[in-house]
Image 1 (cartoon, rainbow, N blue to C red):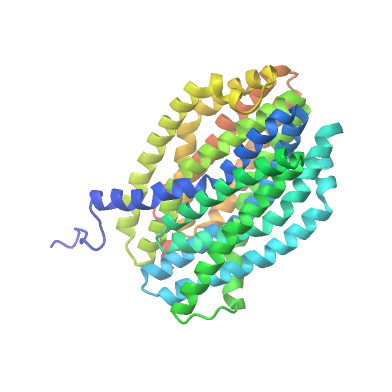
Image 2 (image 1 turned 90 degrees about the vertical axis):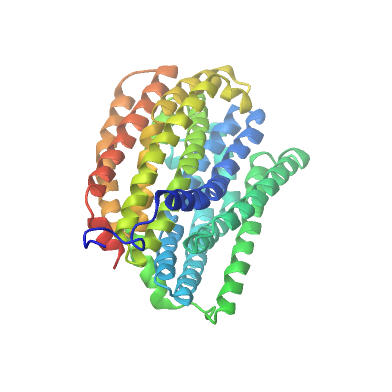
Amino acid sequence: MPASAPSPATRPSAAVGRREILRLAVPAFGALIAEPLFLLADSAIVGPLGVAQLAGVGLASAVLQTAVGLMVFLAYSTTPAVARALGNGQLPKALAAGRDGIWLALLLGAVLAAAGSLAAEPLVDLMGASGDVRVFAGDYLRWSMPGLVAMLLIFAGTGVLRGLQDTRTPLAVATAGFTLNIALNFFLVYGLELSVTGSALGTSIAQWAMALVYIVMVQRNARSHGVSLLPHWQGIRALARVGSWLMLRTLSLRIAILATVVVATAQGPVNLAAHQLAMSLFTFLAFALDALAIAAQALIGKELGASRPIAARELTRTMVRWGLGFGALAGILLAAAAPWAGLLFTPDAGVRSALTLALLVLAAGQPIAGYVFVLDGVLIGAGDARYLAIAGVVNLAVYLPLLLMVRLSGAAGETALLWLWVAFSFGYMLARAVTLGWRARNDRWMVLGAR
């Protein structure tokens, strides 16, 4: 074989690559949409109670998602660490990394939940809420805090299984958790008449049930391979170091979303309620498209751990094409559903009308989103966390002036929300596409991932 020709060990066939992507991405799709489905279910259940309740849940959800989102590195740092150890034939090391991720999640979750319980009202005030919206937002946020610890444990447990190339088990756990969440929320909100408090409490209980499943699974796997269940502080510190860059990357994302909510809040309760629904649908679609990113994290990490950069490059090209295609398909479906989507969540005609415009803009931007999420997953899988953090800060610097322009434009009603979503979908997301595409143009990120 000529020296320039890649060997079968370094370059998988296209069919094998596609099968591996689908094997991980399809189940990951179901597992990834669990959390946005929780929020959509909460919105659908709370919506008939009134606009103030729906707006309050939307505001509190934005704050809660910020705390949860900042900790997503528990999955994003654990997955490639486990995958690289697996690719290098070191299964006990992979399980040890997963164990340390679980311990880190527990410690961080306990601290955040305690702080969130004490700071619920000040956080809501900081977002600019007032009147009934403030009351409902505070209630929802406070009773969501117990579930915050569970969500972090779910992140870490899911990251372990993804790194081990298993996305089917997280799908099963997410399906059971979503079903339990729906049943509990209906019972607590309408059966016991607990309003938004019942919705938050039901979600927290469902999240803890899911977290316990992951804890038991990681414990059994570790014991069966002779891995101690006690925390290894050096391993925890290593995950935390990688996680600090990923946290900065995620912090820039959350600041962008929170700043968008602040502008929507200033536009009034109707636009805020419509924005909350549109953002919930954006999150749903983002996690759906992110299924490819999860496959990228697991597969790229494994290939680079096994020193197969050519295979990593081929998989990246395939997943980028798929991300663009799936984004276009999601946009077409969302555009078709936009005029009627509001009927599922609220009886208020004003909210439905504003939501339709926001969803049409969101639909048009989905191909960009598909491209962004795939490359984000590729670079996370390669361990290129530092670049992702710096790029996130650059993207935020581009987006904040656009938000300020929307805020000062003088636009009112539906038009104001329309321009807000134009700024988000074609300002912020396009900036992310440019910075990620710039990094992926050469092989430096693969060199980092192979270390």
